[in-house]
Amino acid sequence: MRVSFGVEMRFIEYMPLDSAHAWDRTLMVPAAETRAAIEQTFALLPTGADDAHSTARTYRFADGAPGTVGFIAPVSSPFCGACSRLRLTADGFVRPCLFSTTEWGLLPLLRNGASDADIERFLIDVTWTKLSGHQISSPTFTQPARPMSAVGG
Image 1 (tube, rainbow, N blue to C red):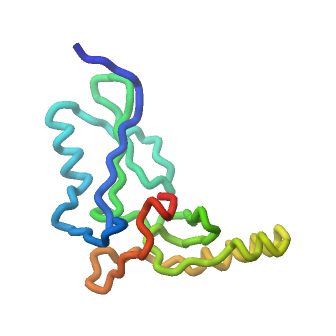
Image 2 (cartoon, one colour):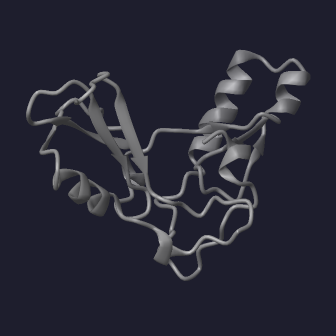
């Protein structure tokens, strides 16, 4: 008996954001491999509804079953060039990228009564510090000190 709930299941690649800093690329399963495994049983078709800035590529079931499947592939298929995100941590820091090793303190501005224009300028300035890519595949890549759970990923 097949039960359908019409939900979206998301698969995200294993990323170097673990608290032990023990990430090992050889343990990462690329999104394409996960999709291929699913398609051995369920044919998938692109939804065609993905926003250009979306981190996920979503698919629907070819047989019309409800629900979708999404794949987020920051390691095997980086989407840095289309990323429009900033991260605000729970302790008041802004990161221009999930993989940033640099954070910018927003909390002092907020606590010292900064105007909306000051905060806007700050966020624009932080945005300009975004690198063109996260460099995970580069031998010089440095894993951020904070794990994903501390960044708001």
